[in-house]
Length: 368
Image 1 (cartoon, one colour):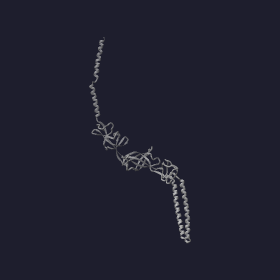
Image 2: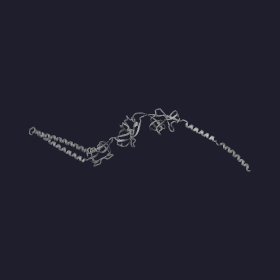
Image 3: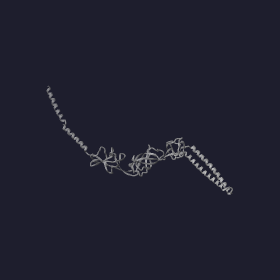
Image 4: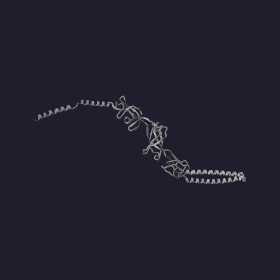
C-alpha cells in the first residue's frame, strides 16, 4: 500500500525541480547585464553637459564705495595762560560745552587787581603833577613877557611841564597793561567748543604759554575715511560726500576739505576729509559710515553670482571647442545677487550662466 504513494510524490518533485532550475539566470547572463549597465553609465558620464551662455549686463553708473570713517574735531585749541601766577579756580570740567567768551580759569586775580589799582593811583598822581607844571609854566611865561624872570627860569618850567606830560603817558600805559593783565588773569574760551582735556588744578602755578586745557571747536566737524588705492583718480572732482553716524539713519553731507595726495604704503590707501556742520550731536571720535560717489559716469559689467566661481581666485567659465575653459577676472561690488566684474571680461563675451559642478576641460553642449 505504501509503494504507490512514494512513486506519486516522486513524480511531483521532479517536475518542480526542473522548473526551478529553468528560472535561474546563468553567470554569463549576469556578466553581460553588468557590462551593459557600466557601458551605459560611462556613456552618460562622457556625454557633453548642457550649459547656457550669458553676457554680462552693462550699467552706466556713478561708482560708489562705502567706508568706515571717523568724526574728528574741526580744530583743537590748547588753551594756555598769558600771565604767570597761581591758579585760583578751574571753572570747567572735561566734557563741558562752552560758548565763546565763557570764563574757564582764574589765575591770581587778586594780585593783578592790586597791580591795576596801583597803576590807577600812579596815573592820578602824574596827572596832578602835570596840572601843577602847566600852571607854573603859564605864570613864568607871563613873568618872562615882562622880563621879570630870566629866560632860564622859563626854560626850566617848560622842561618840568614836558616831563610831567611824559610821566602821565607812561603811567597811563602802565595802567593799560595792568588792566590787560587783570583781564587775562581770567582765561576765557576763544571760541565755542567742548573741553576734551584738563591739565591743571587749582593751586597749581601757571607759566606763560603752558597748556592748561584742550578745547575742540564746535560748529563744524571733520569726517575722515581711508579710500583703497584702486579708487585713485575716481574722486578728483568730488565736491561732497554723504555719511551717517551712530545709530541714526539720517544722512548728512560733508564738503571736501582735503584729499591726501599720496597712497600710504602700509595700508595702500589714501585719506579723504570733509567738513560738516555740527549742531551738537556729533562728537569727535565717533565712527561714521561714509559713502563716496564718483562724479564721473562709468560703464560697469555685472554677472549673476551663479556665473562666477569665487571659491579660490575669482573666475568665469567659458566654452571653447566644445570644452570648458577658465578665465580669471577681478571682481568688485556685490549688489542684490550680482557681482561687478572689474577686469578680465569684455562686453558681449559669453560665459556659462551656472558654474556649479563644472570643471576645466569638461565637454559641454550649449543650449538656449
